[in-house]
Length: 189
Image 1 (cartoon, one colour):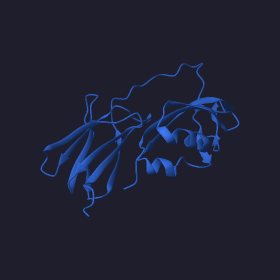
Image 2 (cartoon, rainbow, N blue to C red):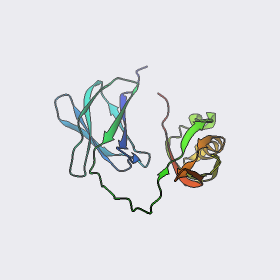
Image 3 (cartoon, helix red, strand yellow):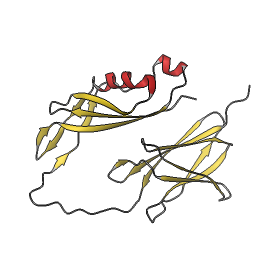
């Protein structure tokens, strides 16, 4: 039995803004020929498959500037993972003197969303987007699916609502905050 061809999975992050949905990703082969062009999903991920074994150059394009090429090798039957920071045009905003200084919530401990046996059996994959509240006490509550992924939505909500966070702080005081979780589920190879 022959293994599946390889795949290239690219995650695009902004310099300060987290994952970048809708970013254009270009893949070139070792000769420099454009092989594939795609856009990241709402989780900031673009997958290119099937790809023959070889060396590829990946870059994020758009916003008037192209990012640097990143070289990656692709092998049969495996996902080659690449994370790229987009250098898209930045916007400087002056903060009014009366504006609060806030720090986002940060993960402390608790379970990570994982595949359920049923989701593996049914080959479920995709980008799960959940909007939740992280309370001033650091608890995750009131999650709702903005982009559900079948059998993985409820188990992911249960995992997130078992987590603990350092809450958002504004001017040094903990506050309740809305937080969007983007979880990319991709079947293991």
